[in-house]
Length: 114
Ligand code: 5GP
Ligand code: ZN
Image (cartoon, rainbow, N blue to C red; front, side, top):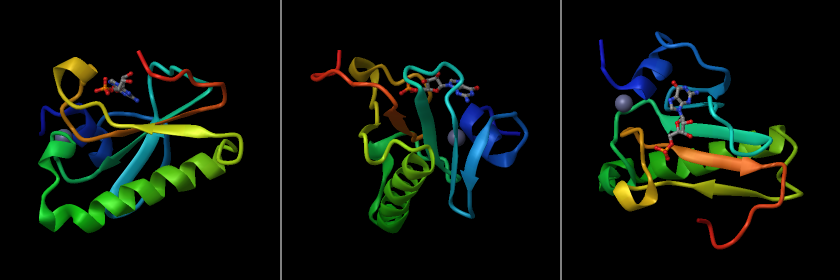
């Protein structure tokens, strides 16, 4: 069994509030939401972060972005606005080493981010 918590969520062995899944991607609610809508979109494939997206993953990267937009629409924040964030390594505060796109919305989001 993988030690990676997001691999475990993708496999269904760690519970999560899944809002979308297909053969390549899973989207679920963040356990510690920072906005009224806070979803995470992950590939089923274990890739540590965006730096690990290789040429062979280009279609997968595009798919993750489309899933992020689809779940934002379904949660009703597409028109009001939302943010897609990928934290990469220490200075960005990446805490889970499995690629994930944060989808944040439902309130005004400050810029620049902290
Ligand atoms: P990062 O800080 O790596 O960009 O984001 C990791 C995110 O994963 C955090 O927002 C954190 O709340 C979320 N998270 C960590 N562990 C779990 C978990 O077991 N379940 C869910 N649903 N979210 C998690
Ligand atoms: Zn993983």
